[in-house]
Length: 167
Image 1 (cartoon, helix red, strand yellow):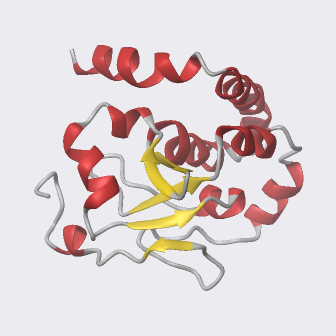
Image 2 (image 1 turned 90 degrees about the horizontal axis):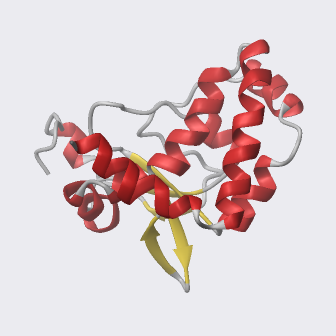
């Protein structure tokens, strides 16, 4: 089953890293609070763009990080090599404002500097961030902001062709 492959080869190995396991624990604990504040969709974007479809920078190179990418050979190549998607530096508020596609390859991937940095960001109090997000609009998935750290400005050609795994 694809879901078993995704979990066993995508999520389970990541959980053996103590920093990643701590990140997941902090993320899970924040879920109830996010729900009570009406911010669960924003918190879900953090999960989507890291645990499922994140990239990580190691020794100056981009590498796969998310289980959703790792469990798809085609998206693995797309995420790292295709000229279509944007690859942007991780910024918590930016990630939590950015919409995503659940039914196709991503138009934007966020690059975390390290698992330790991701954990450190997650351990902070999100309430001030949620307050700022309530006053901000969602960001369309293909958008690059002037404040973004751009690793790759994608052509968005894949999305323009209609997407749906035709890379």
